[in-house]
Length: 352
Ligand code: NAD
Ligand code: DAU
Image 1 (cartoon, rainbow, N blue to C red):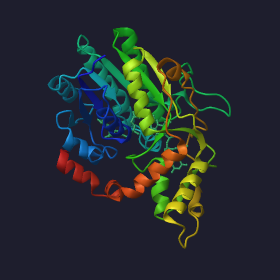
Image 2: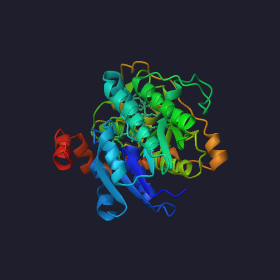
Image 3: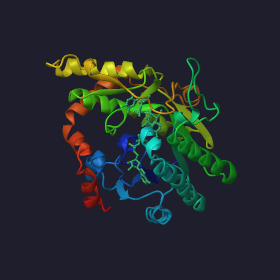
Image 4: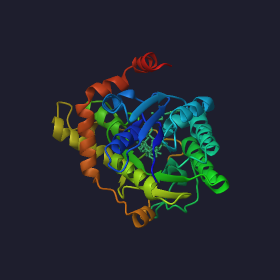
């Protein structure tokens, strides 16, 4: 399968920007990437500043909203798109609890728009790869793993909106024969993640001497995957995955939230040394639990391993250390995404 013009939606966000960086380095991809991103608070043009400068013939940024059908259709035609890798989404569970509307629009209607455009161009269309989450499966007890046949039981507006988009993608394959693949992945961490998510939030708060909020008893479990491993899994599925199929992606690394927070504290104590406030674990503060907080996620990715020979490469310890260092070494990026002026700067430079 040769992809010539790949539209990556949400390419200025955390995983999307890592994916573009990953793909442009590979020898088995020679096409162009068109990054269609609305630049919400989570989309950051700085994430790909160097790529924009160094790869103008292979990479192009377009500020665009996937909820705007006409705008997306025009982009699709103008860039002669043949495939879509769809990351764009509202991605943060806590925000979906406070205000679900943007989640319904972007995650469901936006996905529907892209599918309709692909369907209208089906004779030249090659692949629609949909990025999804393990959260669609709901919550596990102490035992068991999510497999591709686990029934969907989403518990938050975020996971319900992602579940809905997964069903639409599946339906477009079954009904119209659209060439699709879906991946459902566990929690990612690594460079360029917006510091509202647990790991970057804790790194920045702990290095700045601020409280470290741990929801409930801190014993909720997530499976963690270094973002570059996720990118590699996505590309593996895009290249070799059977069309119409879903693949789970996981890191084989279950961790309780509290244990992660403690690991980050200990790494920072080692790198920055302990100051007068004492060990950073002292900053841990148990706060009110998230409503509907899923207790445990764990992933069975044996289908991806046996069919496509994919396994994660990064260990959690080394990946976390790299991530901690990245946030410490990129203070300009951090200051920018945390500043009040940031969004108006984006609108000024990229059009609102
Ligand atoms: P992110 O919030 O960092 O990035 C989302 C990107 O989508 C941003 O660049 C944002 O500007 C863009 N976007 C939002 N609404 C848009 C719209 N209407 N039109 C165009 N662009 C829009 O998210 P992320 O963590 O990189 O997640 C990317 C995808 O991966 C999402 O679909 C998410 O559900 C999925 N996922 C994330 C994780 C994780 O741990 N972060 C795990 C599994 C799956
Ligand atoms: O499982 C994949 C999902 O992982 C993705 O689909 C989502 O887009 C992504 O945001 C992530 O969802 P989570 O809700 O698991 O991630 P978050 O970083 O928000 O929280 C991780 C765990 O840490 C969760 O159990 C809640 C807890 N938490 C989170 C924050 C922000 C805290 O205890 N304190 C916090 O301040």
